[in-house]
Length: 327
Image 1 (cartoon, rainbow, N blue to C red):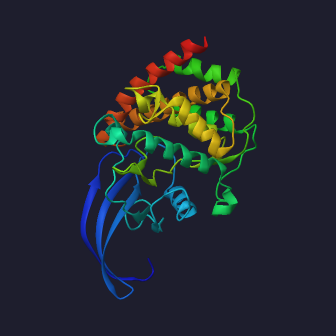
Image 2: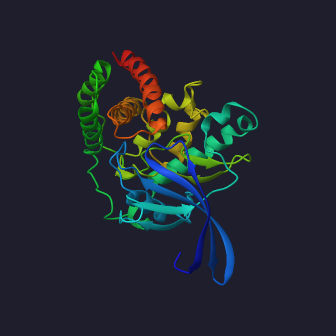
Image 3: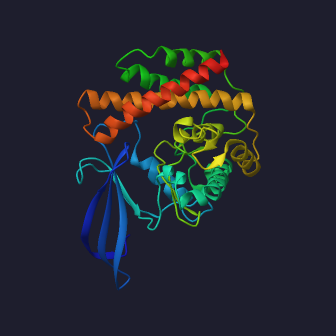
C-alpha cells in the first residue's frame, strides 16, 4: 500500500485455528488517497518452529498470481521477509468479512441448505487451478517444475523424509502404505500444473448465499500432478461424518465429474486411488510433525497439540481401511 499514510493500529486480534502460521486480524486507520479509511487486514507470520518447511513468499506469490482472476483470493497488500521487525517473515492481505471457513457448518442450518452449491463452486475452482498456466499468472521460475513422471515420486520422497525426521513412535501401517505406493506407481501426470497443496474444507471462505469469496492457505503450493489436489480434497478426514461427500459438501461422484469437466483431465479410479492413499500418507506426515514439535517443546500452540493427536488417530484409521481395500 504505497499510497497509504498516517497508519494507525486500531485493534489486533489473534486468530486461533491455523497450524502453519500465526495469524492476526488487524484494523488499521490510514489515509489513503486523501481519504480517512478503516482497513481490515489479515497478517500471517511464520512460526519460529513450524510444522511444514514453507515460506510466506510462496503464499504471497499465490495471492499475487490469482488476485483478480476467476480463482477468488484476498488482495495481497505487502510482504516483509526481514525478521528484524516481527522475529520471522510475514505478509498482509485484505480480510474477507461476512464469511465462514469452518466446513462442519455444512452439517447444520443455514449452511446445510447451500453446501452443494458451495461444493460445486469449490470443484470448479479446483479444476480452474489445475488448468492455469503458471507463466500466465507470473509463477514461471518461482516454483520448481518436475517432469510428468517425477511428480508422484518427488512428493512421496518429500513426505517420507518428513516422517523419517519427526516420527516419535513406529507406524507400521503407514510404512506399509509407503511401500505399496512405491510398488504401484501412478502413470505420468496428464499435465504438470499448479497444485494448491491443501485444497479442502476449512481453507476457503463462503457465505450464507453459497458463494466462495476466497481460497486461502496456499503455503504448500507447488507444481505437480493436479490429481493431488482432487485426492486431498476427498480425504475422508475432512468428511468424517459423511465419507461419501467431498468436505461434507458434494457427493463424491458429482464432485469428480465437475472437476473433470472444468479441468479437461481424467480422474481414472485406479490413479485417483493411488493419490488418495498418498493423501493419507501426506496427512500422517503432517500430523506426526505436529506431535513432534509439541512433544519436544518447540511449539506450544494448543491447536498443534490437539490437531496432531486427533488427526493422526483418525487418519491412521482411514489409512488402515484403505490398505485393507487394496490388499
